Length: 223
Image (tube, rainbow, N blue to C red; front, side):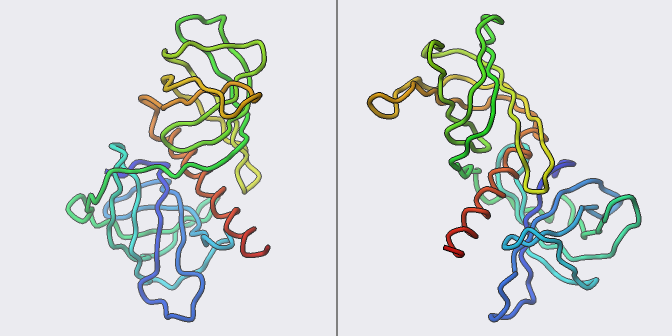
């Protein structure tokens, strides 16, 4: 139901109205019996690790392989020793997950380095940057002197700079949705929809977009 590498989003149940930090996220790194083993629970506001008592209850959700949103109830069961911080959340099992909607991916403006290879012609390729990005697709500026057909399949390689300082490399197939000029005099742009992308790869993009959104919200508050 939930795959290793998926991001789990959490909201505390027992918080009061005065508390600001109520929403968190973590990544599933393993499963054991009725437990979800996750990395550190990070605050959505500060992106820093938060500490909770055993028994803390959460409402949680994640995006499934079918791109739908699943919600469930869980609680912090304990902690595990290892090279990295690991925490145990209660796994309610398949019957405890509720599918509530199809996923509409949040699209963010982002200039991410990307390499594009046209699958019908291995020599047709270029390196550029994205204009926007989401878990479902992206838009890429077409460099001067390069061109793409109105339809076809391409392969993409992204370089995602994460807030932790790590660099994630993501690859996957996509199809051309349309080629257009966003405004007079601007370079051509291609809209692409991801197709049959590996779930772990898609989760990296979703996590990048999520971090980008949080950063934009923080900048607005500080401004």
